[in-house]
Length: 52
Image (cartoon, rainbow, N blue to C red; front, side):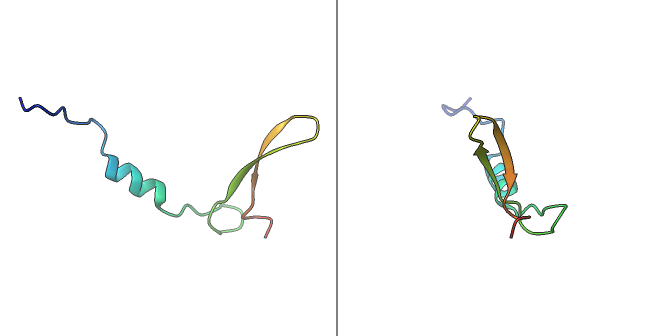
């Protein structure tokens, strides 16, 4: 065997799929999600793409 061990994951394929634009099922725009924290401390994920 060679000195290098081969990675089991295809890093280039994972990066490509991550960078591809996923579209929102509600508005059809690119998905933009942020985590917001309410004054009571509850965390929730919000879609910014639908608010525009």
